[in-house]
Image 1 (spheres, rainbow, N blue to C red):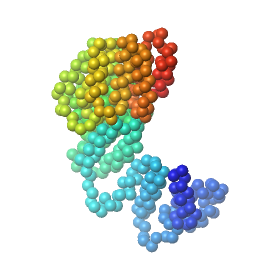
Image 2: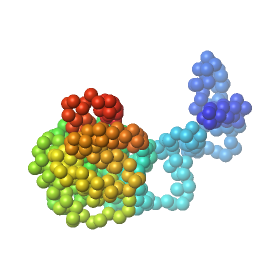
Image 3: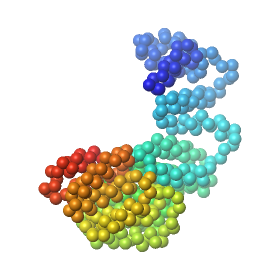
Image 4: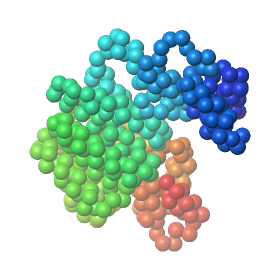
Length: 394
């Protein structure tokens, strides 16, 4: 109703002649079954972007752009919709020019860091609009001549934002946009010359590709690239590449290779600096290490899986909804494999039903792993059928 009231006020302003309906001409003409020129008159075009009474202040053309941007901004805010990319920047452009604002790359890098933290605690897809707007803003900055170092830093920002957007697309089940955006992130990282970022845009992409069910050769190519670029230097991206390799080997029944990859992760983790701050998809903490170990031990039927799962869950704060949700599904699979069928099914169903807006690209596959671990006679159970419906809807 609030949107209807806003629209009603806007229409009344048109009817009272307070504002010329610049963006509404064709709509009114259609409604009244008339030509625009007959409805508004031949001279109406001079008023299209302003009020009915022309302003005595000369218009240099830039004002039209700003008025349209302001109208878009107010319309979006009034409707509770996302602000279109570039609109806010256009509204503020005059002030920025007057103050001689320079590009604050430090602020942009902090923005990437904050997005990395927010993805862990926000509902799936909640950041797509903001990330898209910021990618466009950074792209506009990259179009302008800059010193090589500043250009490289902005490319790093662009790669980080693009990678985060790709994660959001992947978690929302948008496989093609995720694939394309990961490609852009890799190219921006390569152009920036930042080795760790180059490795991350491949290692994290390999993880997402695995959970999205892309062909094993695609996952292997990304992990191989990440490992080759790293050349032995430890990084969060390299740890993620080994994690993707471990997942794939565990699913293919190659327990020795999977456990070897886990050992690689553990050895490398000991050489990584301890990251400060909250959980973030940009870093690799002990929680992520235990997550990967939990998956491999559960899939290979190792008796230590339950203990490692408890450790992993304890390492995540309650705000990290998606990682905990996925660990709970791995735990449910471990229960089923341990012949605690009812307990495993009950936990899996409850996990998927709780906070359904928080899902990741791996949530569906993890739920289906629980189903695949069921003995044949248990698949007809009501809880198994409910889990099946939830798993394939994820």
